[in-house]
Image 1 (cartoon, rainbow, N blue to C red):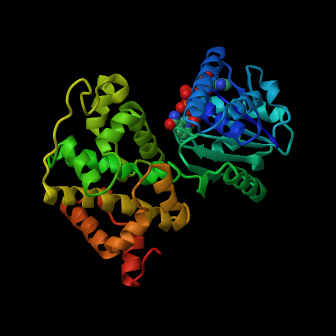
Image 2: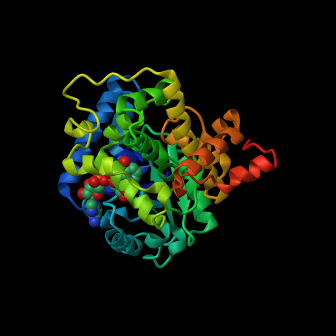
Length: 383
Ligand SMILES: NC(=O)c1ccc[n+]([C@@H]2O[C@H](COP(=O)([O-])OP(=O)(O)OC[C@H]3O[C@@H](n4cnc5c(N)ncnc54)[C@H](O)[C@@H]3O)[C@@H](O)[C@H]2O)c1
């Protein structure tokens, strides 16, 4: 079994280290802060003990996993790795400096990957002499539980690196999708309207948070409503992702962040972790207005915007149709793949909804993807 090293023992790094050790690899988990290593070790012990209690693993397996994991504050300990996955702070210059250091330690066949959510893989690979072995491997939080992993080859990445990476991560029982090195990859790009359009509907006074959340769950079958989910993710984190995607797309109005969420962030109303966000968790949560006609309208407006994003990702060859649908069901638990959902509803109906919004508001935000028009003309479906 090959040696795998993880750089950064925070939320993501610890989770990825747990997966690799569980899958039988010798793992070196490095962090430059001893406190992070200590926390990671304690958390992993707690998680493994809980898995034993729940009879998901036995004691012997737990001891094996622990014996394979080495916590280190000396970067030289990653020597001999066939794969290094970086999961440190989201800062390009710090990551680039680290990639140079990693490259000076590992041998030339070692794949060096980044778990970045928002930086381009090309910009990180650009720091390396042998950039063809650099790739993005984007896990979702919590990494041991979320099945999806986005694999992102940069323009510099070799076909061999891509193939080897996919084989390895598939072997970790993850659902892998291959994505072009573009802002937000699949999930963080296609999911934007789930939050953005819900916020817009609220801002226009069409419905309150509770009613929008109820509509998406009751009629749409989503596990959580947009406002519950933003409170769960954290309004600080979710707002920053939106702003990053908006900036990275040269301020395309489709991704414009919302002042409502910005104010939440500025006020420190981050959501569950601060006890208050869109909802106040110290009190009983407000009741929705159980109006099915209104709920259908809310769902269809948000869903059409989501489908438009998924369709546009197909139009621009960001990933295959199959991978785009897999990403949304396995990465963010959507009840159906958006493209299959669109086939089910009828592409013409979705297009008409977008066109209606576009004509009403005269905003580019609602412009339907050209692929929808083309498909209607040719009487096509996605699958
Ligand atoms: N949290 C998420 O939901 C999530 C999901 C997918 C991807 N990501 C990405 O994963 C990466 C890590 O995110 P996280 O949430 O685990 O962060 P985190 O803050 O929990 O952990 C980061 C860790 O990196 C360490 N670190 C910082 N600078 C370092 C350096 N120069 N050298 C070595 N270690 C260093 C810190 O001590 C900390 O332990 C980021 O690139 C982020 O964009 C995060």
